[in-house]
Picture (cartoon, rainbow, N blue to C red):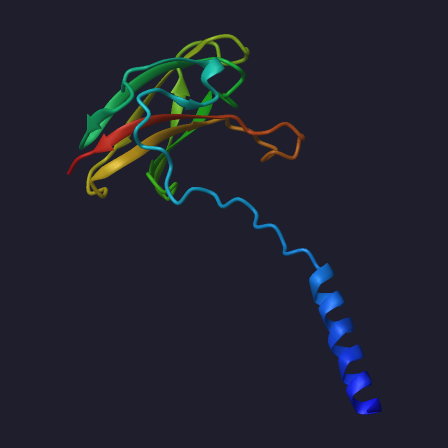
Amino acid sequence: MYLIVITLFIVLVGLMVTGSKKPKEKMPEAPATLPTNLPQVLGDKDNFVSFSITPRSEVTGKIAATGVIKGGYFFEGNVIIKIIDATGKELRTTNGTATSDWMTIGPVTFKTTLDFTDLPSGPGYVKIIQDDPSGGESGKPIKEILVPVIINK
């Protein structure tokens, strides 16, 4: 008799303990790929002025490109430029060089050469990244602009 009462007590306590635990909420997962169906520029659009490679352009080989961005993207006249695939994987890195006064938060013209040679075909992005010598340690987020492109071999 005592054995039955003790067993029931243990079962009830066990149910109360496991029933009171709320299931952990799942954190929303980052998308497996960056959006590829958007025809516009992504990221810091407020500081994007122009880029000679228009969004959703088909790109191949080496391309001399020019652009205008504002918002203090440059350090020592340079801005970082990466070519990434649709998943965000870095494919190639280069830099852009200011062709006007870069010591301003106003519009700055720049030039670069982008090499799409031998890169996998498909959607990707030209990612223009603020050259921050502190690497973000200043407490300000590093700004970036993404221009969607279609890479062709």
